[in-house]
Each structure stands twice: as structure tokens, then as C-alpha cells.
Length: 171
Image 1 (cartoon, one colour):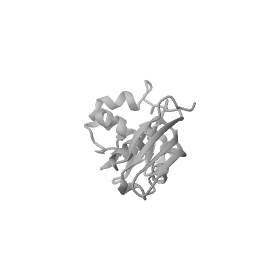
Image 2 (cartoon, helix red, strand yellow; image 1 turned 90 degrees about the vertical axis):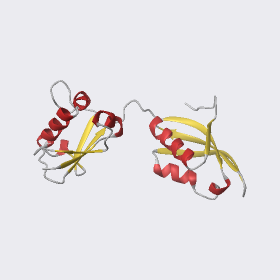
Image 3 (tube, rainbow, N blue to C red; image 1 turned 90 degrees about the horizontal axis):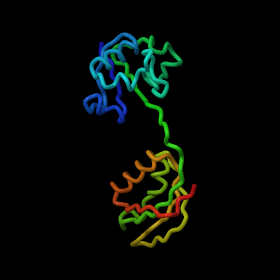
Image 4 (cartoon, rainbow, N blue to C red; image 1 turned 60 degrees about the horizontal axis):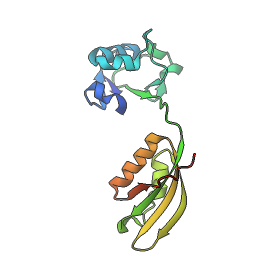
């Protein structure tokens, strides 16, 4: 029996840098057991001292939370997908200000709208100057650190320069 287990980014290093691992087992518990025996570093991240799934780890079988089925006794069949999703902890929401400078080819694109919809952040335009050839916008961005950093990475990839506004962070 072949079960696809989706490995979250924070745990990929412990699973040989794989996004998806093909595992064996008849229940979620058996698959997790196989996974932790095959990749020993995952054991302490997934299970507590009593062998239960750690409270900050969510496990889904085909988009169904196992806590609402049969927990570790949830049966799985060939072709099922198990997703391991660590809860986001310690990432309190915080407002930051950043000035974006747009290359000419990005001025007419809805970049601010896109980052607000692609990432879990809320944007608020604080000041701007946009013409046909040049554009800059100072944004207030509210969201967790991880989402903020993902948005900045996306902006960099599309050629938008992002500079934090120093000493202007709103608590």
C-alpha cells in the first residue's frame, strides 16, 4: 500500500529534503510509525513522550483532520494523502512600514493587491508617488513575520525593491 505524506518545509531537512514521502501503513498511526522509523529525526518533532501526536502538529488525511475521525487509528488506503501541518507558533502579528520602489514594467501591475491576496498580510498605503515611468509606495504591512518575509521575497523576485522604514514601526 502506498500513501503519500506531504512533509512541511520546516521538517523537510529531517526527511531528506523531500516534499512528499511515499509511506506504508493501514492507519495514520502506522504511517507515522513507519515515517519516524525511516526518518528518526522526525520522531521528536511529531510525537510527544506518550507517543501521541504533539498538540502543535495537525494531521490531515485527504483534507480531513484526523482529530475529527479516528485520530491515529484513522484508516488509510492506497493512494491516500496525509498532510502534516505544524501550527504556527510565536508569530504574533506586527505592523511594519516598508517603501516599495517599482521598476517601470511593474508600475501598472496590481502588485500591492497581489501580495495582500497571496500572503496573509494586510496592506495600507501611507504615501505614494507613481508616474508612468517611476513609482514608489510606502506601505504599512500587518501580519506575522513568516508571511511578511514571504511577501518581501516575492517582491524581490519580481524586481520590486523593498526597504524597511527605520524607526517607524507601529506597535
